[in-house]
Image (tube, rainbow, N blue to C red; front, side, top):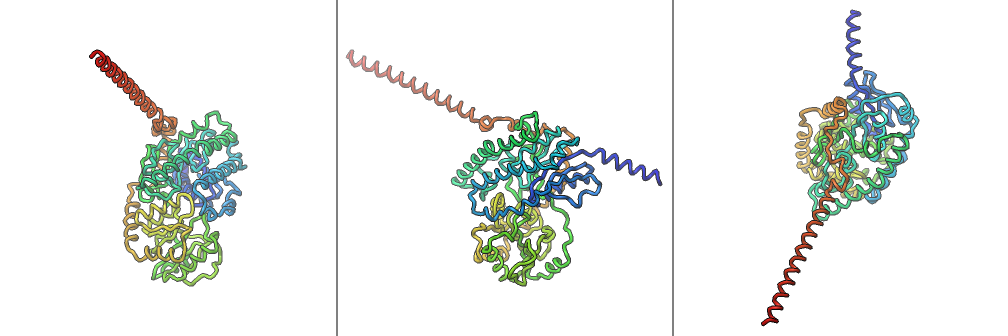
Length: 513
C-alpha cells in the first residue's frame, strides 16, 4: 500500500513539474474583467501550470492543486468607489477618450509602483509566459522583457484599434466602426466619413499621447535594454473575448483567436429565497442590472425614480441588482439583490427580459441563455454593443439620456409582446452555443502552443513591422502620383511642342503663298 501511495505521489509531482510558470497581469478594478481573466488563469492552474496573478482582488477559491498564487494590489480595489461613470454619460466622445488615456496612465504607474509588484520584480522569480489584459497599459510589456519570456494579450471585449495596431490586423473604417461609436457595419457616406475621422483621431492619440506616456513608464520601472516599441509590437498571441454573434465578424491575422463566452460555466445554485421568487413568477421576470462596475445606486434621483415607477406598474416581477440594503418606495413586485449569480438567473425559464448596460459579458450570457435584451448603454463599447444587439434583432436599445417612463415602458412592452425578439435571440443562442471545442479549452490550447513553440513567432505577420506610411502604401501612392504627374507633364510638353511646330509651319506656308 505504501508503495502505491509513493507511486501516485511521484506521478502527481511529475505532472506538476512539467507545467509552465505563467504570470497574469490584470490590474483593473473592474471586477467583471478580473472574473473573465481569472477564469482562464484558474483553468491553467488546474491543468498543472504554476500561475501567479497580479490584480486588486484576492481569489479565495483558487485551483485546489496549490499551483495558484495571488499578488494582490492592496488599496486599488477601493478606487472603484471614487468613480461614478454616470457622471460621464453626456461627455463628448473625443474628450472621453482623452480622459480615459490620462486615467489609464495614472493607473499604470500606480500598479508598477505598488510595493507588491516591486517585490515581485526584485525577486528571483522566473516565468515562461506573461498573459496581460491590454487597455492603455502598454508599459506592462516590460514584465515580459524583465522575465525574458513571450507574452499573450487578453482582450476582454474583442478586437479594437489599440489591439489591431499591435498585430497589424486590418480594420478598414469603411465597414468596421470604432468601438466607442454606435454604428453598424452598414454605414452610409456620412457615417463612413465620421468613422474615418474617429479612426485617424484615435491613432493620433495612441501614437502621440498614449504610447509615449507608456514608454516613459516602461523605461522608468523596468530599465530594459530593449526598445519599448520592439517589445510592444511582438505579442505572441491575442485572445479575444468575442464571437460573430455578439460581435461584428471582422478579419483576423493568424495570432488572433476568438474565445468569446469562455467564462460561461454550468448553472450554479442560487439562494433558496431567490429561487422561490423566480419559480413563483408565473407572469414572468424582468432582470435589471447595470453590471459590476456601474452601480444603480449611483444614478441620479430622476433616473432612479423613472425606473422605479416604470417597474412598479408592470404585472411582471422585477429582479433589480441594487447595491444597498434598502430601496425607497419599493413596490411589491420588485426584489433587490446586492449581487446576483447572473448567468444562473438568466437561465431560469421564467426570465423574459434582461435590461442591461450592454457590457460584453452580460450580452454574451444573455445570448447563451436565449434571453431578449433592452440595452441602456452608458460609456465605452456599450453603445456599439447595444447597436449590434438591435441590428441582430435580439432586443432594443435606449440611450441613457433618453430614458423616460414613456420610452422605457414602450421598449419593454415591445420586447415582451412582440415574439420576433425571442425568436431571434433563441436562433442566435443556437449558433453561439454550436462549438466544435469549448472556448476555454481553445484558449488553453493556444496558451500552451505559445509556450511549446517559444513564443510562436511564425504566427506574426510582417505588416506589424512596417512603418505607418509603408503599411498604408503612402510612399507607393505618392510615387505613382508623381509618375502620373511627370508623364502628364511630359505629354503636355510634347503636345505643346508639336502644336507650336505645326502652327509655325502653317504660318511660314501662308507667308510663302
